[in-house]
Structures are given as C-alpha cells and as structure tokens.
Image 1 (spheres, helix red, strand yellow):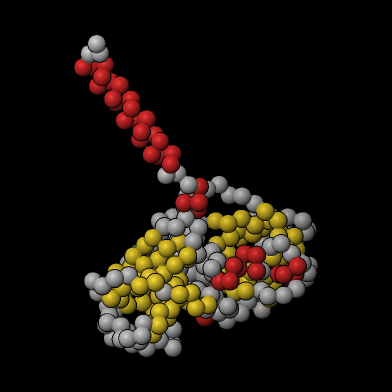
Image 2 (image 1 turned 90 degrees about the vertical axis):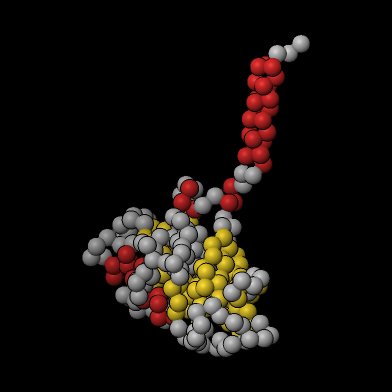
Length: 269
C-alpha cells in the first residue's frame, strides 16, 4: 500500500506535469513581443523621395500629417511597397535598414517607421522595397558621402523588423477633422513595441466596447449612428503579438476635431 508521503509526492509530480502541459499549450511564437525576438535580416531594394534632407512627403498614406518631420519621427520614415504595407495594417511598424554594397555605405543600421505607401515601380516589382525619406537614405552613408549615396539609384539593402521605441512618449490620438458627435475617426500615433495595430475599440463611460474599422492607413473610425457621450476610452490590439492596451477616458468631454489627445499609456519595449 502506498504511503501518504509517496501519494503526495506522486500528486505533486502530476500537478507539475499538468502545469508544464498548460504552459506549452499556451506558448505561441506569434505572441512574442518584438523586443524578445532576435533580429532577422532580409534583402530588399531601396530608393528615396522628396527633398534630400526631408521626410519624403508631408504625411503620406498613413495619415500622420506633418508629424513625420517632427520629433519623435524626425523624418526617419519610409514609404513601403505592397508586400509590407498590407493595406495600411503595417503603418507605424519599425524597421532597421542598412546598406553595405556601395562604396558610400557605412554599414550602420538606421531605424525607420512606415508612414507612407509606394504603389509603383520597384516597390511593386521587388519582393520588398523601401522608398526612404531623403534624411533616412542619407543616414546610411559614410559621413560626408550622403549625396554620393543618394545618386546611386536603386540600392540593395538589408532590413529587419524591430520594436519601436519612442523614448518614454505615450500613445497619442489625433481626431480627424471630419469627426462629429455621431462619427469618430482617430489617427493612432507613437505605439512602442509592435508599432502596428490589428484592431481598435471605443467605449463610452462604463458602456460596452465597440469595434472601430480601419478607415485608411493609421486612421480608425466608428460611425456610431447616434451621439457618442464622452469621455471615451480606446482599446488597442497590436498586430504582431496581439497585445491589448487601454487608454481610459483619453477623448475628453468637449473634444474637438483636429485636436490631438495624449494618453498615459504605451506598450512595453
């Protein structure tokens, strides 16, 4: 007959085994934070557009407006081909790019944010293509040889998806000019970590969460059909790792179209 101590020991091993199975069954690589994943480099083509020391375009297809030339973007931005733009779902995602095959290349990696879409030319014909701002393209050069690198035409570069890091800045919500008491559209800015979004939900006070639709780029909308009663909370779900984050009461009473409201939260890096 088994002793009480041996039964207890067997039960402990059994419970530990169950815990092991539970941990294994819940582990999905997709849900790893980008900060916990090693850097994986791939090959792409790269060009640049706009002014040599500019931000490419004023805002671009993601809807960030003139924020692209200001801190924390600071003109280190890129338009991207369809394979990585994914109909705007990847707006806000961060990449490192570097070049090594041209004499003017420094080999130093430059971090850029997707803020625009490149719809033609090599952006479509190549499996992956970065149409960088002049600032970002020049930053890949050996100091003093920026102009030489910009004259190179289409470059072969190496690129890798990385976590976004906006140095302590919290997520902001820019309310679209077309918003009104029955319709809300917001551009989501400065998400640390994954950078991209799979979904956004809105809630009035203590009410139920209501799913917003991606309007275009980084703009998410809700056609409520009736007047929304602020303050409004917004819940974000990241695309890469499916992490959720809630900005409570971030859209205040008396909110205005065109205004930007800064939250008190951001994803961990």
